[in-house]
Length: 459
Ligand code: NAD
Image (tube, rainbow, N blue to C red; front, side, top):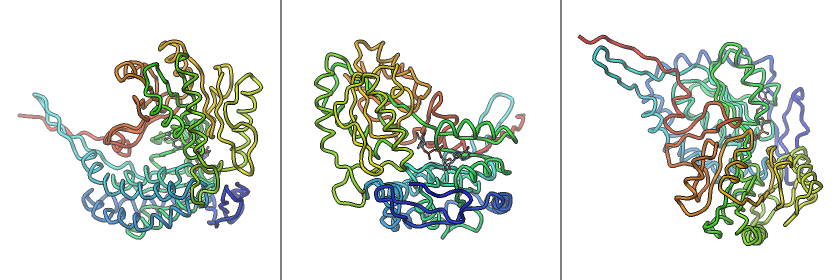
């Protein structure tokens, strides 16, 4: 529930499960942006003069401190975002352990590299870009800031974070812990909505790391052209799941239900479209509905709850309208449907869908699983690719068959008999309208740097 405005002095964060105010932070006046950026630029000079090993020495203890604070910050996260408490605490715990584990991976990724030919020795240096603006969404309100803050800082940039206006408190709590260790001005947090986001993007910064909707990403890319600012845009998705004949149906159903409904479907790589071979579709649908019935919706602070509410009433209205439109266009409701109480949308399973329906094209970002039957691999591939998005995807079936189909899907990350996340060191990368630039893994860490070459003739 978001009843704040950018002009109000306090940005109040509301619990989406109960409607109660959790707490507030002061809104950052947009006019303060030049001074905030100037502070970051001044701090960056000294921060970048340190070697990466010296920065790492300052930053290493932060992982353990975050782990100590995981329960406290996780509870704030659940109260202002709605996900079950175990997931809120788990999200902060994951950020804490990744902080500890990724430091050496980042140091190795941005270490100088040597190239030789008969005439020259060249060294590639991965230098900081300068001041990095991180603008993040509410669905993983600690993890999304974390993915920009850690590589951004360690590679020698200073960072200005603008967390989502829906979840300012847990992002602030996460940064307060980090700031126990950092020199002043190296990491700053500003608060507000798109007014503050736009002011930050137009300020004198060097890199914009944005995670959020495709429409905001397009706007930011346009603004970034003024000054040729670097961008990393991680955007929305409409992830397909293909289930072929020969798939382990228990495993496929368990994954599909978890990944369609986790975080109430408010996940960029949620399973939003399911294409099932018509020969196994009836069995798959029956098992899918049965498994969905095991989930428990409610206030994330309550014991036993596995799925929370929508973040806002606007998000609820958007999801409910998509479902109603699909039903009036001929979709069959296998489970759920209709209106829920408060900010809750009933867990919904639809079948009989076609690509003429908006729900198969627009991002839903809610607890809705859409099942369409297919009669061939070619049809599955064509439908999976019939989208402007290309974030994640997965294919379930006999391993080689599924891997062959997976290779034709135009997503950045495709899983075979698993979710889309790759082995450790893989980038988090969207294709088509889901991304522009990417982060994570050695290749991703270098996106926070300017590569420079220095060449010396031989001889
Ligand atoms: P959003 O685009 O509305 O807002 C994201 C952030 O950008 C917020 O902090 C907001 O205040 C700010 N903002 C909005 N418009 C802006 C503009 N024009 N200029 C500068 N800042 C602006 O997105 P949301 O509703 O917070 O998050 C949901 C979206 O995020 C979904 O589309 C989801 O798929 C996407 N997402 C993507 C990934 C990924 O890794 N690809 C991960 C998480 C979420």
